[in-house]
Length: 230
Image (cartoon, rainbow, N blue to C red; front, side):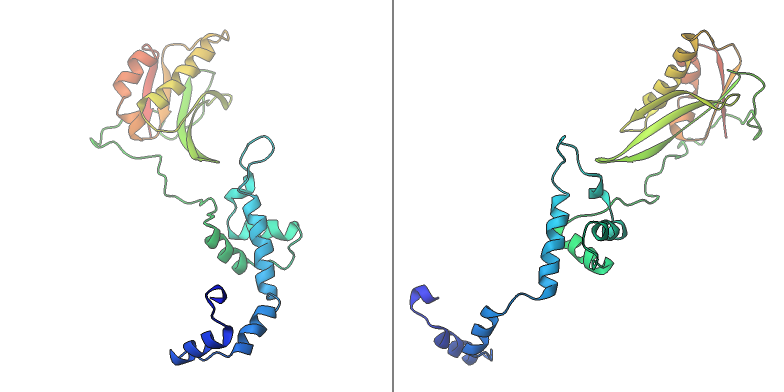
């Protein structure tokens, strides 16, 4: 407004006419006043939070970027911000649009098949095995990563509790669990421990295992396995 020829006194006079009670010396005192301690601390904390958005020297995302309010508060305190409070950190995280990794139960891995069919439980809750390659159990879960999460399927030999097959995928479907089973068979056959006839393959009743049971027992196991579900 000064470039257009308006002084502070004239501007304050117009504001008072509009119901805003402000004096010229109030404006001058505000302009000369030092920033509040809270403003300074917020700026320092914000700079530290923004630095986490920059990848490291190898171009990888920094692991602290997935921290929530509590872990981020502890991280700030360990890095020279001893006065940081969880409420302040929570407010600054929202202002910066930073959200910690939410660990909840929103992702379901065991979804029953729509037709309700499932194989019988051949083990009757007995998860012991007298010899290798007699009983395999399989399941999949999800693991958090920087970009979200991925599904991980595993096949375990009950005799040794060894993981004989595994597979990762961003989607859960028939091909995902089938690749895991194929890998388990391939590894056993190529390490001098072929799978004998009558192997029991046990899983839960997730639709990825239940729906393709006829196909999996045929093409994937080549007639070597008997399917079993919980």
